[in-house]
Length: 165
Image (cartoon, rainbow, N blue to C red; front, side):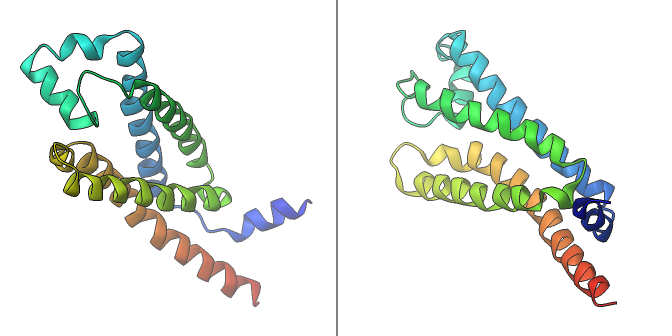
């Protein structure tokens, strides 16, 4: 038996809720950022900017001018988050074997959304993001972190107590 299979037996069974929430976070990344990629590449973002509702939606999620200029950056970060979503989906199969990745997910997104929050507060014309992508991402991240962090701590305590036997 390999050392990995021995280690895997030491991890407790993850809550089905934690697996579900991890998958939902992954799906939210795929949907939000996948939609961004498609709308930018097809020019839909410029088409909807002429409609008041479309303009409002763009203002909620697009930083800077709604008529673009940052699409290259938006496409690059969207590609990263689409891949991230796929990896979250896969990590949900065996959460504790992917604990470093899931910890990184929490910390990196706290940094990302934390910076967006500060920018939304201090940058002229960007306050709308506090009720748009900052709120949406913050709620999704808070739900994931509120389930992952306690589960990870409990698993670590159980593993330590089991190794002392």
